[in-house]
Image (cartoon, rainbow, N blue to C red):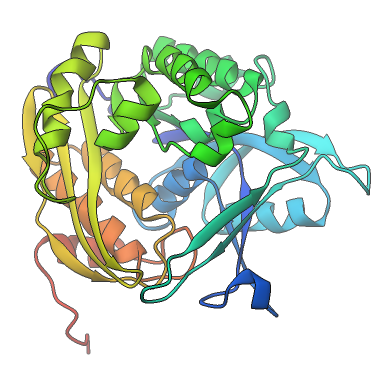
Length: 360
């Protein structure tokens, strides 16, 4: 057991996530203004973590979310089943014209010196209508949930989604689950609902209930209003600025036991240097740095979160848990889409220093 972090040894679910499901339209390397076809990926920051843990790491996971009864909802629900995630849906009826809708995310991959571009259509999104009282948390947690996870993207959608997160976190705590939260700050989403001031007020209220926090130094500053570090990082791979902020984080939120993040130096759209660091119950940890040939960068952070949480849930030493997160996040950038296609054996091999030599 990590100091101050008691992870239940068993439960009907290893992890329950709360968030929005979306479908991402991906024209590959072609910009949208020239696109003639798209792949459809089912995604959602919280769902991605649950899906990765179920499909790659063979754990029992669930997602509490909104679902609309129409063909796009059917498509998304099929992918949830395919990834092995147990759904807890609040259903909405589609009126055939205006919604409510399952949100759409548009993201081309870019190439070389041309960066990826992400934009949204979350108009009349069903998940934004979710509110406290929509889920029977007592029944959901009754048979045991070891870990609860949510994130700031879901919190940004409406005034009621953040209250729902807090309600769920309180239920999770009462049931003995570890609570994690991803600061994944998306300025475009917050800018239409109160901007930075509202983001900080909302997220700080949520983080007061959190044991494990995921976020980089920029997100700690923007989302929590933590003052920037006195230490200037030599590069994006230098963890000194991140570690320099942890004392402030823990002083303001003393219940937090772990803060972790990925480190990424972008040389081009398809060439990144990749690392990961964590502050774990008073000790700093660093994963190795590797060079990535990136196929699709979306979802790498969620891939890290899943591998890291898996390591903690299965009792791996902290350094090994961090390496599993780092390895899975790296592998996820080699696949199309937002969720994993890796196997646990591949993750462990890469974490041990495996190479890309052909497997025969």
